[in-house]
Amino acid sequence: MNKEFAPLAADDALCFPCGSPPAIGEWCEVAPGVHWTCMPLPIYVPTINLWLLEDGPGVAVVDTGINSNDTRQAWERLFDGVLRGRPVTRVLGTHMHLDHIGLAGWLGERFACRLWMTRLEYLQCRMLAGDSGRGPSKETQAFLQRAGWSEAALALNRERANTFGHMLWPLPESFRRVSDGERLRIGEHEWEVVVGAGHSPEHACLYEAKRKLLISGDQVLPQISSNISVHPGEPDADPISDWLDSLAMLRERVSDEVLVLPAHGEPFRGLHARLAQLESSLQRALDRVRRGLDRPRRVVDVFELLFARQIPANDIGLMGLATGESLAHLNHLQQRGELCTETDQHGVVWYRLTPRVTESLVRDNEQG
Image (cartoon, rainbow, N blue to C red; front, side):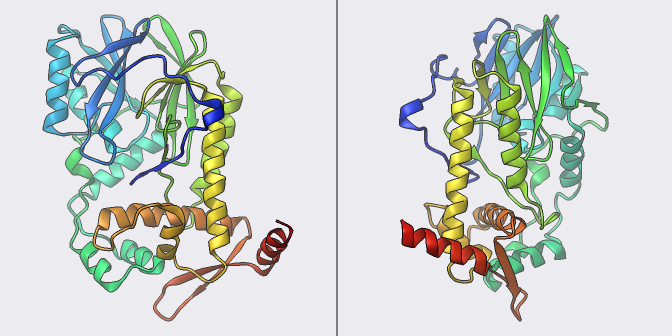
């Protein structure tokens, strides 16, 4: 559920030139010295794509998969098979989500290689890992109560420990920071770091302009759109503005001729068309929320406006994802001056359109 479908437009379908994904523990070459491999995931998408870049005597690894027996076994098949004993020279993490960074520490220990990632992603990962095993904080419970969670759901959440660290091999205690605009020499080629936000705070893409390649991580996916959420630690954040700004930035800085190498789905061409689709999908979602606020609603009441499936109140993980994404839409509209809020006697926040926006929608309906 942490990915919302954003369908391909029929009139500008993307091109997928690389064929089917390689089997787990195998790889295929998508450009000279650029290898595609997949790792299994036990979550809402079945696999993650990793990219292995020729780097002198070994390979630089972009993203790692989660810390699980299945993933480590898949890596062992790579080491014993196609890598033929060659080392990992460095690990580059696009961002701090567990499917991307879960085995960075394991690879670093095994090959005595460094982790390269942006500062915010590294520090946030360390912070969340430090909270593992603890129950939810008072601030988290208050965040969910304001969103309209029932007492039963709040009680279930109190029983949950933070499990972030369970799928994360301990990160190294030092790292090599990468920054937006920096150029990294990897093997015979130079890759520019292009940093986006919205899905995560400082997500690094890698752009090789000469050969027209973009390793996009979760910042651009071909058939699903990444979860954009507000989290309890920053309840007033507006990640949708960050996401939209990042889409515009990618359109400006990265050629439309690139082969996009995403974290999920197949490599594709048609970057600018996909950026337009992602923006259009998000604007349609915002409009559904806007039109659904013809009466006061809580965050949990917005689920039905955004998600095709029912969100069960006893599925706490799914409830948390839906809450974060729904609040992201509401915060964005509120910061645009389109919403006002009231807090009831139970501490629950109710959202409604401002009179100005309501009048505008009424006029649009009358004219339409």
